[in-house]
Amino acid sequence: MSLARVHNFSISLDGFATGEGLSLEAPFGHAGERLHEWMFATRWWHEMTDRPGGTSGLDDAYVRQFTPGIGAEIMGAGKFGHPGWHGDPQWKGWWGANPPFHTPAFVLTHHPRPSIEMEGGTTFHFLDTSPAEALRTAREAAGGQDVRIGGGPSTIRDFLAAGLIDHMHVVVVPILLGRGVRLWDGLESLEKDYAVEAVSSPSGVTHVTFTRTGR
Amino acid sequence: MSLARVHNFSISLDGFATGEGLSLEAPFGHAGERLHEWMFATRWWHEMTDRPGGTSGLDDAYVRQFTPGIGAEIMGAGKFGHPGWHGDPQWKGWWGANPPFHTPAFVLTHHPRPSIEMEGGTTFHFLDTSPAEALRTAREAAGGQDVRIGGGPSTIRDFLAAGLIDHMHVVVVPILLGRGVRLWDGLESLEKDYAVEAVSSPSGVTHVTFTRTGR
Image 1 (cartoon, rainbow over the protein chains, first blue to last red):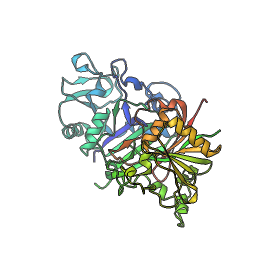
Image 2: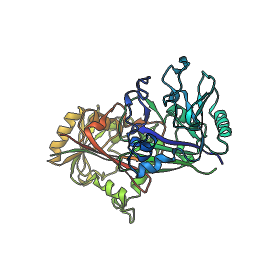
Image 3: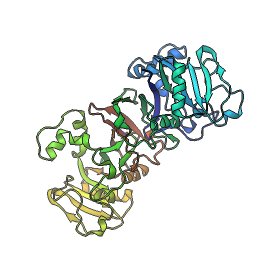
Image 4: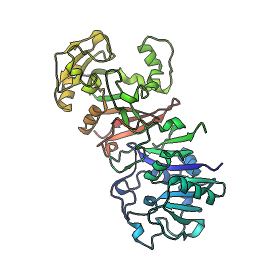
């Protein structure tokens, strides 16, 4: 069965997944890269960026579940580009010529455009549709494999609210951003449909996984 | 040196320390006692309530730091009583004849009343003053020992915002309350003044401690 999975989704202790003041120069606003430093320290990240070293402990074990078994990604317009990217016909995402997805990647947007084929197996497709319909489309493209719901926070929240997420890995970083976009708004009693497990890492972050039960 | 300490302060994964709809019948509103079940399971709690048994692991090790070295408590009006308690001249708190404080306990309220001496060493005093001034008063009463800042969330937030907390133990419970009173609002970059440590427990909760640095 093809699952819908969230991986490596980092939030601050006060629940923000991104800061305020997002722009081309500051993709996460005033948060900077502070939510992702735990990831940059891992061996997986070092491998992805062709550098030696990196940690091979708990954080690395979690972070590498990003890729295996995934056949497509769905992301929100706010993950694909800076505010206003849809006014730029040349915009092809933040990730350069060879994005880290290596699968079809479906961008949810009210401003669809023709698909863009990148290097390394990533093709961006643009959909103006509901979460459920987007998931059906992505599942077909995934050829029986799982679909990653890639974020940002509003997109994950929409998929959670629609009951579409089977597995979610959230990483709580011990900083207080104070402002930005929250992950958890409007999800009262979400835990009732999931087995929840929290594991703190020596790096300081806490990995929280939600695994759907009773289906 | 006399420290200001917070202990066993439980919040949901989405940051709420109490629910909505607080009343005499529902002190934590729709949250019920779900934020405190981890504590009720400990040996410390069983001892406090004169029952055998209880867990003696990580949760118990944290929870028992509540008492030693504490010479006074400060609490907000919302911890002392239900909304409207100050209209009831007979109200003496939630805790019966022998409250679990066993020290002077200062209640911050805009409706001060004469002090109330309870059994077991607890005396409630009522102050209409600032956090800093309340802490000075409580420190004097504590005779060189530490002062516990007992909550609720608005009171702890006020003391944090004023830079008055030296040690804080927060317990993150893996449920989503969705609504209520948040602990973290308006505390951007709080972590800069503290060493923060997170430790997950087999019970499912995560203990997060803030220890003030650089003073």
